[in-house]
Image 1 (cartoon, rainbow over the protein chains, first blue to last red):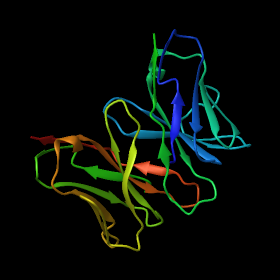
Image 2 (cartoon, chains in turn purple, red; image 1 turned 45 degrees about the horizontal axis):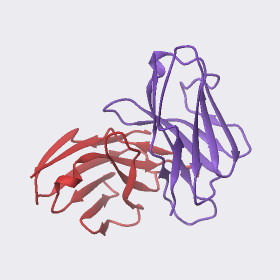
Image 3 (cartoon, rainbow over the protein chains, first blue to last red; image 1 turned 45 degrees about the vertical axis):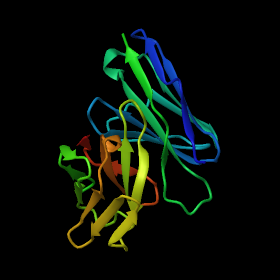
Length: 117
Length: 113
């Protein structure tokens, strides 16, 4: 149980285009999901906290107009990288905390590799 | 104060040996300390976690030792296997009930056969 999926697993796009990444909790509901980015051989950097039915909370230094987050349901959050540039190339990972549970566990998706040409 | 410092950056251990990774934190309001394992190109997977009211937790070959007064915690991997070769991240959950995790810098473990 407690599986988080991401789609697509990898994407290549041209500079200036927008890319949408989906994060789904497959067997549980989550009011809170998180989006991270990870550069090669580096740690996970939290970008934003996504709450169902409300605006996302962005970490300092993350451009909210560039990284649009929508958490429309208890099982789906999307991250849209708008007007992508090569410096946005990274590994994007989402995570989710199950709703109405005593667990502290945050479950991570498999990640999405974004390459901007 | 929100940082979690992890060491070493990389570690090479012989098969059957003990792998030890250390983390230190400053914020005493952190209330949950998980360890994640990540293989290349994959998302992190929870290995084991501890709360600050416990000094040690063991699950199979993995043990967390927690020293609240020193604000340090460590992961011990007993009988290390080549399949344990991965990057390990410690993390701490911030205060305020947001669920946000602050990650250490990561340790790349290589277990030699």
